[in-house]
Length: 105
Image (tube, rainbow, N blue to C red; front, side, top):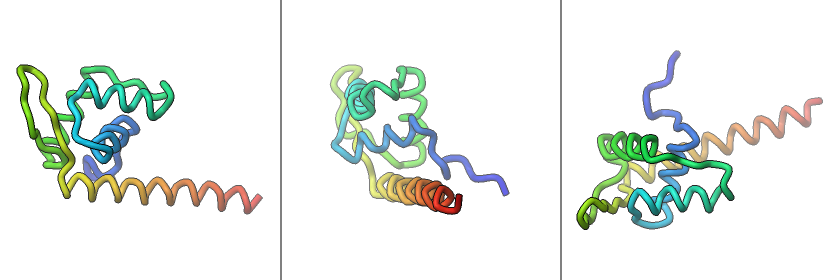
């Protein structure tokens, strides 16, 4: 059965939510957080980032808390934190399955 949209996050989506778990941020801060956290392995461009922010805002996973000119600062909501925690558990299960499969060999 196909998964619903937003049920499984892309890597970029996961890291954007992770950034907001750390603290409220604006888009530029999110991109820098992801680059730093992943040591440059994951780079997110403005088009991708702002598309994700729009989806997250529509889903009420983040909310805008401050606007200074064109700079918008967002923070994660309880609904967003729940989605993040579910994804962490899903990814942990994937890693455990991989470790278990290796033991089967």
